[in-house]
Amino acid sequence: MKKIIAIAAAALCLGTTAFAQTAARPASAPAPMAAPATTPSTSTAPSAAADAKADAKAMKKQADGDYKAAKAKCKPLKGKEETACKKDAKAAHEKAMADVKRAEADAKAAKKAKS
Image (cartoon, rainbow, N blue to C red; front, side, top):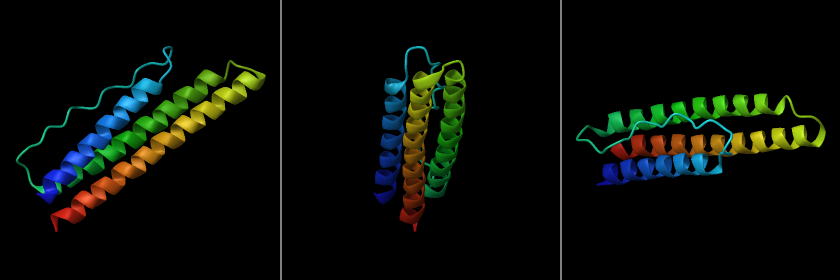
């Protein structure tokens, strides 16, 4: 029962994060690649924990890529616009990294729940 709850919580967090990232993205920004849909399977908890860890790693890579792209969009701007653009990019990156930490904690909790 604990395994199912941990898996459901991780899937819910990842789904909410994906929604929040797409909702906050400006219309001119390219949409990120969608993460593959996760479905509950009959696999064991260690593979679910490994999947959650891999998801967290992919989220970090996506956050870093989005940050790099957002900073690149700030380069042609000057003055206060550039400063505001960089500030927005940094804030979005920090939020994404907080989501990554949350996903890593969920992965760790899923691993702990199996034992």
